[in-house]
Length: 252
Image (tube, rainbow, N blue to C red; front, side, top):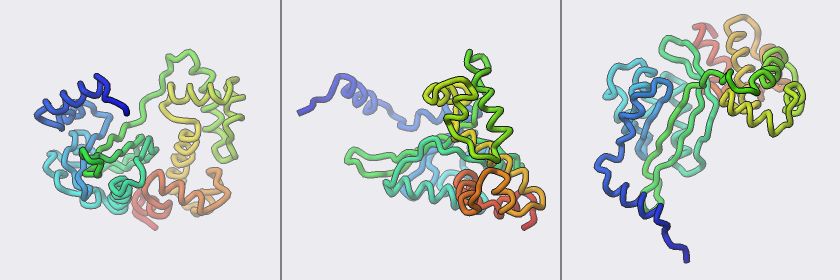
């Protein structure tokens, strides 16, 4: 039979002694590049930081508290975030570093990595969820491996419309597969696959402002299958390509 470690005892004692379980709210208010939130069993906001308030085009936290994402964000973004929340609250799975493209109130796009995890009571029952959404940081150009990895990034940016495989990226950077995966995370805070997705969705977003058909854009961005492109685009932006075109340009 396992016994609690002194570490577990210390955590329990400290937790019992903290008057405000949401003490982290003030800390997250000081992080302008991180969205932080806590939601109840109905996915209603209970705690938010100031960054989230600003991203929603609001001035005060009271504009969000007690409301769900579907009530806060424009359609269909709110419905997408709500579906994520309900899956986490149902115990299906947590969301870990989901690459997402957001449209801010002024319609400027911004990339982030989102995490959501269920909150459980002492009996293991899910009682809510908490999450963060981090703006993608600038590349760490001081890393000694930056120049090697940058060669692989250049390949992605120049040939995103072609099939791109990890071994090819590794050879371009003169690294092993394990090395290039490790250095991508250290330097860009993304996996190589996430950067490929980001580059393709960025390109598709620009093309959707023009007159090319969705099928033509899918082909140009390296997706031989129109439906695969639509699935990936929606998983990343919360919108289908057609919905994104209408929202960003005002035309179907």
